[in-house]
Image (cartoon, rainbow, N blue to C red; front, side, top):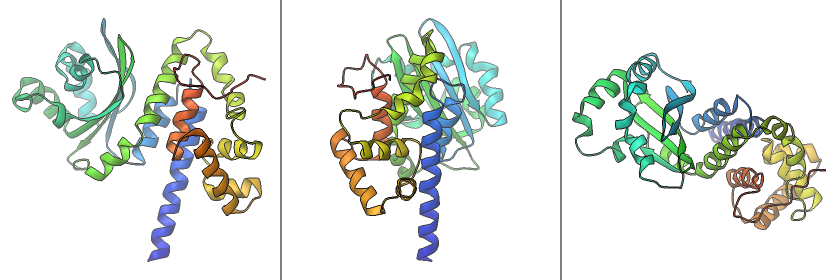
Length: 279
């Protein structure tokens, strides 16, 4: 039994590592939100996903969707005709918070919401029984909502699932903002092509050459065992390198490593940047 559990955990870690690697490769690519939502579903599955761009002066725009049939019908049937103005997620964004948060619909809905025409006409029609969303402010006029819904077949999101998803906030924040910045930049195609080169230079001036190699493999989705195998070093040596990487970058997990990589791509960031010389 212990071996079976250990094998399942190893498979889960490998699968999540693959998702992280795929996400890195799709920054500034049309497949970015498919990869990002796929990563999130490894932590908490659902049967309805939609990524929506909010803007103060325009109606929302769907960036990506994998919706259950009833939810799709409800979304395109009334949401964009104006009912989005009553959405608790949209109203939460208008409050002006500039940090990324994971919200649960029933925790941010105003009093009387579940008796309102909006709820009965839209949410009951969609078939959703629970919904959570990452709300990512992009600038003062726009934001991105990553919404994950469950119908009765899935049940409600558990406290444990919400805690796991909360740990992904930095990855979601950095990835979405960087992707949005590249998409808005006329040179974004060129920058996207340079991503591989930037990845190979990640940590220059901070990490040793071997630590850089380990970091690059981790960012490409390799597990600790896979890193050790690729570099032909002992697993214990890989763990030492990983601890040194985390200490030098001031982080404590692989998710934070991804977030730090995304942040390092942005020269406008207020944080000290890692050296990413374009050679």
